[in-house]
Length: 62
Image (cartoon, rainbow, N blue to C red; front, side, top):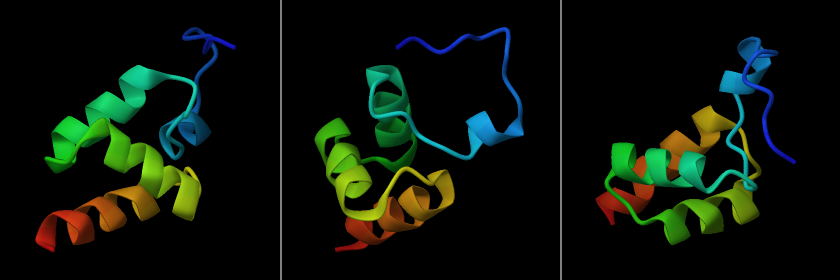
């Protein structure tokens, strides 16, 4: 299901969509990890953006 870009609110920014590959690629580029690592983080931790960004930072540190 595609996002309706005309119906966004702040809740949309707090989540990373597994369906939207572009969101995984964006977070991967931002965190300097792979898109597959982002998908793995989503599977392990859910799709909360803050949690994923912290997890990505920890993944990069190791």
